Amino acid sequence: MRSKIATRAGPRTYRESMIRNLILDWSGTLADDLGAVVEATNHVLAHFGRSALTREEFRAVFRLPYTEFYQEMLPHAPLAELQQVYLERFPEDHPVPMIEHAEDFLRHAAESGRRMFVLSSAPLEHVSEQARRNGVLGCFEHLHCGVIDKCGHIHELLGKHGLDASETAFVGDMRHDIHAGKSAGVTTIATATGYESVPVLLTAGPDVLVRNLSFLTRMFRLPS
Image 1 (cartoon, helix red, strand yellow):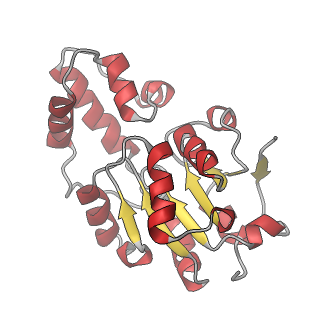
Image 2 (cartoon, rainbow, N blue to C red; image 1 turned 180 degrees about the vertical axis):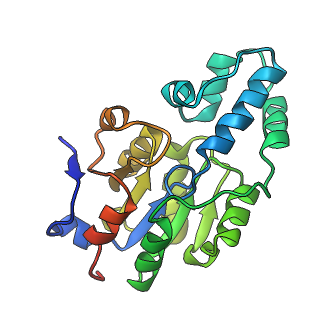
């Protein structure tokens, strides 16, 4: 099935009008942490004697689950040591701004009565502190963070919070987010604001692709 590419506001489809629950990735979808992540990743690579990656090189090779990325780049490095070295360069109090239009989107979604949850591979301490500093922590009912495999965890999230898959969408900026959403039968929405490019995102076949979150705000303009 071809993805619906939203480049401007238009009439909402029936499925869009029924979305009452939003599962949201954090990094690259709501938080603009790509620069900090590239810097921390290069710190890890240098620690293990590997050359640094440019921002575009990183975007071309990075993938989730992040354990697969590091298995390819540093096959003999212990995961616990990787994580420790990474956090040395990217501590939880590192300032991270929100992606453009993210705050307006979250405010609209909250005002329209939609339930919102974060599903992220980023550490809980990072996400909660970044959300608090940016004044959006109260938008979320629960933060599911530090998740390596979202394809498995999303089913637990739906069950724990009593979410109907037919009324739920997963919004993310990477193929793994789209694969996770499809595995759970929810609407999948890719946003071209983060880690993976549009051509790469389209290979996962999202139900909808938006250039940025302002388009999603318009799609969900009226309360369900």
